[in-house]
Every structure is written in C-alpha cells, then in structure tokens.
Image 1 (cartoon, rainbow, N blue to C red):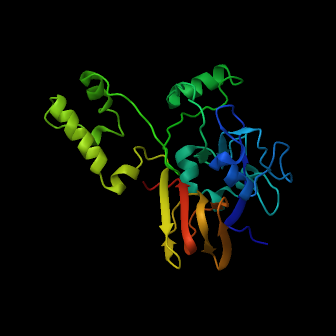
Image 2 (image 1 turned 30 degrees about the horizontal axis):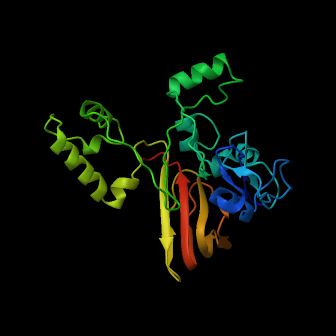
Length: 286
C-alpha cells in the first residue's frame, strides 16, 4: 500500500507557567480539538485541565514534543525518515542536510511576560550544541515569524533616534530605511507611516528564505488551489470548517485539525464556513 502524502497530525501542548489557564487559551482549545495527545503520548487524548497553564501547541518533529500520525500513532519523524524522498524531497534534503522538518509551527497563548531569550546564529548554535548538548539541545538557530491569531495589545516606547536607526538596518526592517542616509524625527514619522500603511504582502513576506508562511482565508463556499511546491508543509485550521482535497482524496477540516503535506502535492481547499488556514512550508526554490 502506497504511503499517502497527506495525513492528519496529532500534536500536544507545552505547560509553561506563562501560558493561559485552562480553556482560556487558543493553544489548548486547538490542541484538544486536533485531537491532541497528552503527556503520556499517543494513544492518550489531550483533555484541558482548567487548573493547568497551557503555553505552546507544537506541530512538527522536534523531539521534545513531537507530532504523530493520527491514524497510525506513528511518530512523524519516523515516517519522514523512512520516506525522505517522497515527503521531504531531494532539494530540501540537500539544502538542509538532514531529514528533520526544517521548521516548527507553534500556537502560543501568553498570559504573562515571557523571559528574555537570546538566540544564537547557526554557527554558534552548532558549536554550543557540540560542547554542551544537555543544555543546548538544538544545533540550529531559531529565526522566527509571529502571526496574531486573536486581537492583542502591545506597547513599546520609542528608543533614541540613533538606536532606531540601527534597528532599521536589520534584515526584516531595512526596506523601511530612508535612502537619504539621515534620520531625524520627520524620518521616523515617515517610517512609522510606511509600516502602518504597508500592503499585506509586504507585512507577511518572510525576511529569510529558510521557510515561508501562507495564510488562506475563504468565505463560505469559496475554493482555492494551492500549487505543488518542492518541499513539505504543515497546516493548521484555526477557524471554520471545510474540505482539503489531494491526490483524489478528501479530508474534513475543522478548527484545530493539523495536516502534513508532502512535497509536490497539489492541494484544493473548499470552505463550508469562513475557513482560515495557517501554513508553514519550506520551498528550496525561494
């Protein structure tokens, strides 16, 4: 029997103390609906404990909190390792040098201020992991992209102009850097205006080429075809209901369901009720 290139995932949720209590957080809500697995692993089912704090729902192959194939209970990494060429693809294997999923989508529910984190670059991460693997468990760096799934408020006071000028030289922000070379109050005002009025494709464009994101929003009865890419994807339905069709098979989508799609697979999405899908993918051609 041929291995399917689309299968539903069973994921789980971290219980960090800064997470939201019980069913207040979207991470726990989606994990329970996935259906997720509890701390003992599959086939245990994730059930929300209203006294627990749930911080992050992880969807991927990271060994600390791996995903499993819902229909078989197999570890996603084991399935990928046995079917690298079909699910990951030669181009992605060559680019990254391993068969691990090269990204880790998460849903975060934050109730308290998070501790300050300093992420090393790729070279330093590999060096630290080699020297002290028990404390530095991952040899990779951690470029990240954050998408707001619900309304939230954030505040950051303006830094001194010279520090803002330096920040605008960072890769994700350099597109807003004034070409004149000077940077005063009027320049800052123009930078803020450009950021607040930027087109959606500018805002959502990843600043690095190691992975990409795609947000699909469909009204009731609408359809969209997602063309094949030469790399793997993981998608989560964050709202609504619908159908995912691939390779002649139909899969029911509901809030909290998570899906792995192997490389080179065309996917059609059809909405039953205002469907929203968030997808992370690695495309070696970009």
